[in-house]
Amino acid sequence: MSTTQIILLALGAVLLFWVVGAYNRMVRMRNEIGNAFAQIDVQLKRRHDLIPNLVEVARKYLEHERETLERVTAARAQVMAATDMVKSHPNQSGPIKSLSLAEGVLGSALGRFQAVVESYPELKADQQMADLREELIHTENKVAFSRQLFNDVTLDYNNAIHQFPTNLLAGLFSFQTAEMLRSTSSEAERAPVKVSF
Picture 1 (cartoon, rainbow, N blue to C red):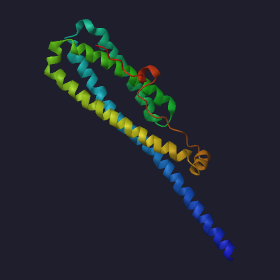
Picture 2 (picture 1 turned 60 degrees about the vertical axis):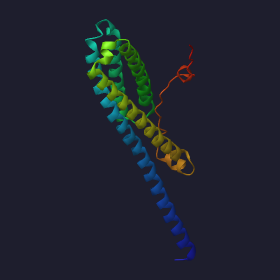
Picture 3 (picture 1 turned 135 degrees about the horizontal axis):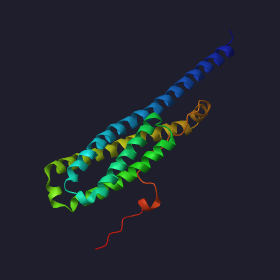
Picture 4 (picture 1 turned 90 degrees about the vertical axis):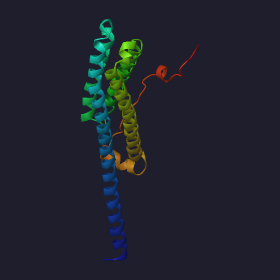
C-alpha cells in the first residue's frame, strides 16, 4: 500500500467517523425535544388534574357564573386534545402551533376564572380553594420552566441542523426544523400593557 492510499484511507475513516458522530448527535438532539415535551406533558397533566377540582369547589359558590366554569372546562379539553397530538409528533410545527393556541385559550379562561374568584370573598376565603389555587400557581411556574427547557433544546437542535457542514447531513437524512412553543400568537398580545389610574 502506498503512502497516498494510506492517507486517503485515513481521511476516509475520519470522514466516516465524523458523519456517524454528527448523525448520532442530531438524532440525540431530536430525541431531547421529545423528552423536553414529555416534561411539559407531566406538568400539563398535573394542571389539567387540578382544574376540575378548582371548578368543582367554585361551582357551589358560582351558580350564576356557569359560563365561566364551562369555558375553563372546554379550554382544558381543547388543550388535552392538542397535547395528545404533540405527544405523537413533538417535532412537527402543526401540533405545536395548535397546542400554543389552545394554551392561550386556557390561559384566558383561567384568567377570567381567577377574576371571578376574586370578586367572591367567601370563595376566596375557602381553604380548599386557596390550596388548589396555590398548587395551580406552582404548577404554572413549572409549566413555564418546562416550556423554556423545550425551547432551549429545540433551539440547539435547529442550530445543529442548519449549521454548516451538518446541514448537509440534515438535508440528506431529512431532519426537519422543529417548532418552538410560543406563549403569544398575535402582536396585540405582545403589546405593552397600558395602566391608567
